[in-house]
Image (cartoon, rainbow, N blue to C red; front, side, top):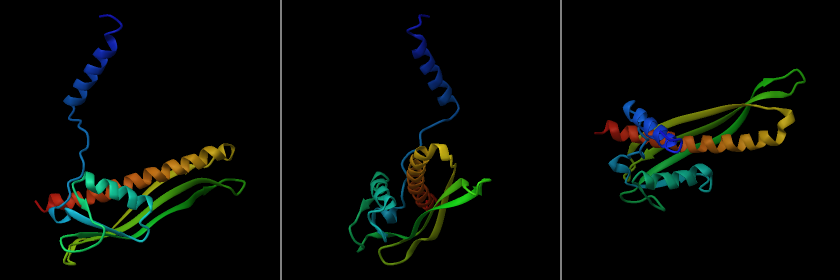
Length: 169
């Protein structure tokens, strides 16, 4: 076998191995039939969570509505907080480790006001170490971790809604 064909052979072998082990890409969430038209009710409509949900819900098959009304379910987000907590303090009384925490509470109401999903709480955390010699890098790491938490929170909400759809089948 020539060296030019070796990378192709490795890719084909890897694909065969992944197929054999049952690996498959995660699909978009499938929402319950009662959530085909959804209005997002959140205190800060310009928050990253609201923007990401507004992008993710149509990918999951829902149509966004500007306001609640007939035939429109309401995804009500009553709490959306990102906080930073100190986990450990070093010898010079400086924080060494932090925890980023994203806390969200939500519920889903049907068009007639009935409860589709009772109030749920999701809390995601990420820990990171503060290195005073890498202060600029730490700020970038905090931004990256915050964006990851926001992306993961949207997926966690959609998976909860999908579990409802699966339970209703």
